[in-house]
Length: 233
Image 1: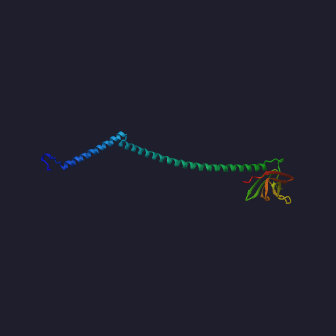
Image 2: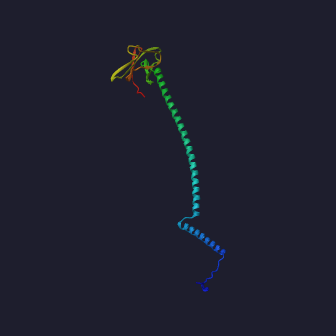
Image 3: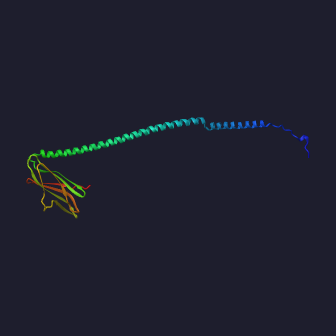
């Protein structure tokens, strides 16, 4: 079947340059429209890029300021720690010095009492007396220190005999240990104003000491003084 002339449609040809221009313009409109819609969406959603950038800049500045403050505080803390350590060292030195001073005062008071006992005693109280008796344990052995004095009022040398009687318990029963033994000669000291005697007390195995009696005989008089046995440290 053949075409008729009346059925033919004549179309006007468009230039390629015009088509390309139209397409470019359409793309530009689409992009611009999209950006407009994006900014509109940001404004509707409450987000503003410029405001966010400004807020970020302020936050960064505040963080930097806080970091500087933290650095200053850390430096101040380090200085305070050094000062505290210095104060602690100074306090320790002061406490040690005070302790030494207290010990010196105690020692001087003991010496003062010692010399007062020798120099200040009356004729009535004059004679041999026990000034000090100490017990100390070293390496499982007990050692004694006995100080006897005589008043300066008596310008003479004296002989004194000394015995130690340690009272305690052994095998569950009361028991005494003498040093020197009763069959032995007592310790003898010879002095004019004072005597500082030191020695060792030998105790039998299993003996539990409770107290010690010091007996001193001199110039026709006998002195007895009981001392509690020190607790072991």
